[in-house]
Length: 165
Image (cartoon, rainbow, N blue to C red; front, side, top):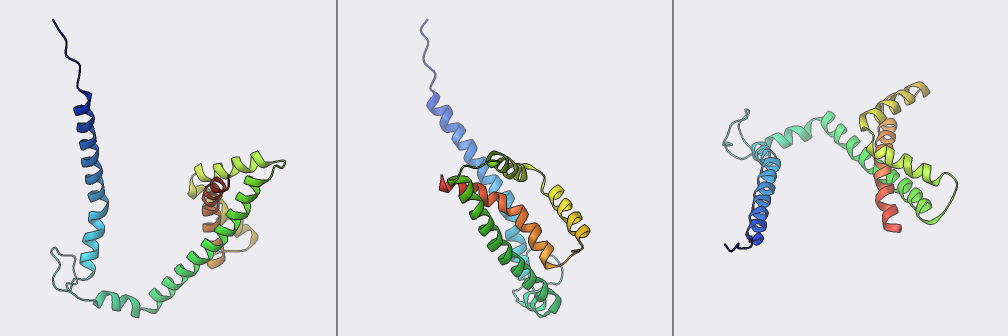
């Protein structure tokens, strides 16, 4: 009795098809709520109804005419810009030192950087908040910027150091 070899080419193409369908369904699951909410944002109805009725910019005008909303949005942009600048500067200086120089404690600094990435962000945030409260800095833009900077800087160190190596 003669055996025929298995045709793995069709199995691989079937697996690739299943992967593509899976990725497609995942992307639909991820982006469909965003598309629905985006469509509802322009609806003339004051209730969430599907399909949306009419087209209006009323909700955007109402949001931007609220001074508290505009103030919160400007604070968010200020925090984002300050955090980005500080994180990039700190990460670049740290990554440059780690990539170009050999010094005592270099391994420890690299391990602390990785530990900051793999540790749970809420734990570090609560610890920073408690420390800032103990020092006497409670709430406001500065603690928020410091918190975001300490959370983001290790990621920048990792990416920039790998580019410098």
